[in-house]
Each structure stands twice: as C-alpha cells, then as structure tokens.
Length: 513
Image (cartoon, rainbow, N blue to C red; front, side, top):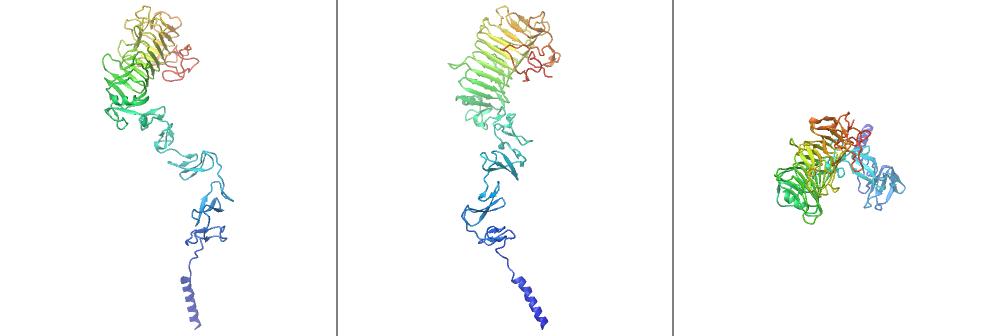
C-alpha cells in the first residue's frame, strides 16, 4: 500500500511539472517584454530596482530618465515607452552631452555612412557613401550625378570627382576649362536641324535659325554639333557670342563673317570653297556698331582670312592654303598660330594697298611656304607690324626676291619689326630683302652677305623636311634671344615655358633638354 501511495504522489508531481509551470511576464532576461502594460525592459534595474524586469511606463514625452552607457533612456513622444538614443559625446546627468566637434570634419564610418561634423560644429551629419566609407570619409563618386562643377566628372578608376577633359564627358557636349557648360545656356545647331523651334540639344536647329536665337539677346552661346554645315555663319548684330564648334565644319558655301559684336570661336574648322570669298572675314561693321572683335582658338581655316576695320585675335589657330590679308584699320594679334601655304609658290601675309593704321603682332608662331609683303604706300608710323619669336620657313615671293619684302621701292614697301625670329628662305634666295624693316637679332639663312645685328647661320632644325622645326642642341638660336620690352614672351609654340636655359631661344620653339 505504501508503495502505491508513493507511485501516485510521484505521478502527480510529474504532472504538476508540465501542467502547473508558466512564464513570468515581468521577466526580460531574454531582452523582450511581451505584456503591453509592461513595455520596457529595465535591463540594469535603474528604473524599477530589479535588473532584467519589464516595467510599466507613464512618463513626460521627451523627458530624459537615465543613462545606459552611451545611450540616453528618454520618454517617447506619447509617454508610453522609452526610446534609447545614442549619444555621440556620451551620456551625462541631463542626457546626451553637447556635441562640440571640429566643423566640416570627418569623424568615423558607420557601415557605408560617413559620420561628419556639421558646418557649425554642434551636430553630426550622416552622409551615405555610394562607393563605401573609408579612413578619410566617403571613398568617392559612383556616377557623374555625384559630382558638380568645377569637378563635374566621376573618374572610373579613382572614384574621385575631377575636371572634364573632353566635350564627350559633359551632357551638354561642351567642356570649357575643365567645367561642363550648362546645357540650358546653349543654343544648338545641326546640319540636319529644323528651321524653327528653340534649338535644344535634343531638337537642334539649322545654323541660320540657331545663330539668330543666340545673337538676339545681349549675349549668347552657340554649339555647332558635329557635322558639315553649308550655311554661312554671319554675325551682324552687336552681341557677345561664343561659338563652340568641336567636330563641326563650315564647308562649301559655309563661311564665317563677323561685322559686329564680340565673337569668340572655339574648335571650329572652316573649309569654304566659294570662289574669291574669304572663309573667315572680320570686316567693316554694319551701321553704327563699334568695330567687331573676332577671337579664334583651337580652330582651323582651310582658305583665306581677311581682317579690315576690326580686331582679330588668333590663339592656337591653324591656317592652311589661302592668303592672310590685313587691310585698313585692321588689327591682327596671333599667338601660337600655324600658317601653312600649300602651293609651290606659297601664299602671302599681305598688308594691303593704301592701308593705314595697321596693327599686327605675331609671336610664337610658325610660317611654312609663305611670303610677307606690304602693298601699302603709307610708310608712316600709323602702321605697326611686329613679328617676334616665330619660325618662318618661307617661299619665294611673287616678284622672285626674298620672302620678306621691305622695300626700298614704294610699290612693295613695308615698315615692320622682326625680332628674335628664325627666318629661312629657299636655297639661293636671301631670307630678307630691302631696308625699310627693322630686322633685329634673328637667325637668317641663307644670306648672301651679313646683316648687322643678326645671326647668319643654319638654324639646325630637328627635321626640316618633316616640318619639325624644333631646335637641335647645337642650334645657334639657343639662349640667343634679346627681347625688347614690347616683344617678349614667357612660352613657346608648344606652350613650353621660356626660358629653359640661361636666356630665351630665338624662334617659335624653346629647346627643352
């Protein structure tokens, strides 16, 4: 009987183990609270006195209660629970300690987020890093959308924003001095464009229509999209116009004529074939407008150039074939220009008949197969012709004498200054002739007789036949220039800094060891 009673008591005990045990709703040793009436886990007992206990909450919204390490236990917005707020500067008696950081300074990474001090030094900004966070902050950009001017391009290798180096890197197709020109500031022309519309990049216009819109205001910018334009680009209104022509050509009946305004042309090829009409002309202004100004940079003209009653500035300009004519009240200012006469007899740099008030300055430039003449009968000082630090590998003139005609006859007479140039004529022809020009400190070759104040010697080009007019180390032009105050330079045709030696070199090219 006693054994049966023990068995019954044992079975009841076992049954009680399974049927009588239940979880404690106040315990949060597992980190969770399941009873809505006890929503907050007091893990350290700071609120209720017993660690690991779920407690009820009835608090003032936003009120700080207690610190839990670097976390501030703070009443939520409804007063029914507590929020745990991370304190970057630690938690103190009144809550998170005030932030006092170095403005605009990276602090640390939080995954792909860079934690950085804000611009006032009293808070932290959380900045998402598209390519991850590193020791110094965001590692870089992922696309151009993460960059802006003056560094608008995301480099695919370094993931760093950089300046643009080509038009193709800009949505507007125009990169200028490392920055992308805004598409909204450009008027677009295309050979296949429309004769109407607003001339946007996606809906470009014919050149005539686009030029009209670009010049209708006080200033404008015209982008000629790649292709061959047969319409002329004629500017007859007083305006400031910039023409971007990378990949574009004015061909056939297309030409550039400027009769008003300030026109700045970049990266354009002009190949007009209209008989007896210059491909590029900067001419007498229309109406009462001030004289026009034309700047050509990184551009090429396969044809003739006329400058009269205007100012033409040529910078990194290439001229192939046709003559260059400067007429009355014409100003021609050229730096790093390349003039290549394509025929056996060459073409002329021509200062025209009865012309007065000519102003010509050419430096760091190259002439191949040209000859220079002045048909002017005005021998006064109103004509200023100055050519310096240039290399002239000349052709025989139309009269069969030296390629630079300096009189003394009045039919072909020029008053000009030639300083620190290399002037080479065909064998058997003197490099210069006449006495009306000031020929000072040039390397002349050949000359049948010495020319006072000049060097008569082979300039020793690297390869004249291949049109490589850089100087050999043994050239007499090295360190031999004696520039005047009015005609000096700090760079050469290749934009190499001058001097490279003890003095500037004569000619267009500075010898670089």
